[in-house]
Structure formats: C-alpha cells, structure tokens
Length: 139
Image (cartoon, rainbow, N blue to C red):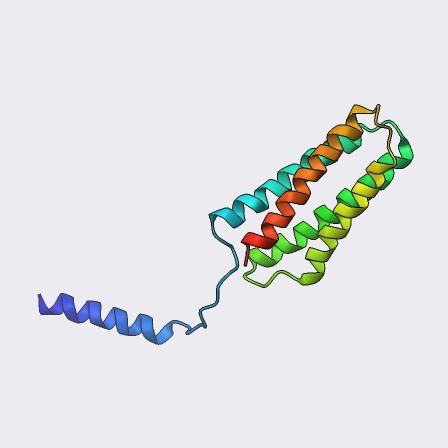
C-alpha cells in the first residue's frame, strides 16, 4: 500500500516539476448571453449577404456587398483573436460598425420595389441590433 502512495507522490512531484507555470487570464470567450449575441450577428449578416446577392441594381448590390464583406472580415479577425485567447482589437469592432453602416447606406439607394433590398434591410437591422448586444453583453 505504501509503495503505491510513494509512486503516486513521485508522479505528482514529477508532474509539478515539469509543468509550466502560467498566468491565469480570461480568454474573453464570454457567457451565454454574449455568445448568443455573437451568433445572432453572424447569422443576421449571413442572411443579409444572401439577400444582397439577389438585389437587381448592380451598383447597389456591389456597394452593399462591399459593406457586408468589410463587416464579415472584421468579425473573422475578432473570432480569431478570441480563439487565440487574445483581446479583440478595437479596430476590428470599428470595422464591423463601418461595414454595417456602409451596407445600410448602399441599401438606402436601392429600389423599395426590390424585395431583396427590403429583406436585406430587415436582416441588416437584426445584425445591427445583435452587434449592439455584443458590445453590451460581452465585457
């Protein structure tokens, strides 16, 4: 019986000697409400992208696609930072907001008779609300 205890104690001592001491830092993964808000903005932006792809006016479509791409690229930067355990760069958050704003501006130039413009505007509003929720809930 004592031999097993000595072996376990020796293994624990060895493990303690070879393990690296690391500072405990939060990974900013967030709580449930935060992650739900993150999922909502990703889903709403994806739906917006689909709607924008169906817009009839090529100029409006191209401008709206550029805004959606800017927002999605910035969300990707934020996601990579979070998964790496790093703080999300403030510039990426600003880029998400700028992309959403650019998309909204482009959609305002679209025809109200184009159902894709109406649907994209609705989904963009959902993405914007979800983005506001991310800012409020992910601290």
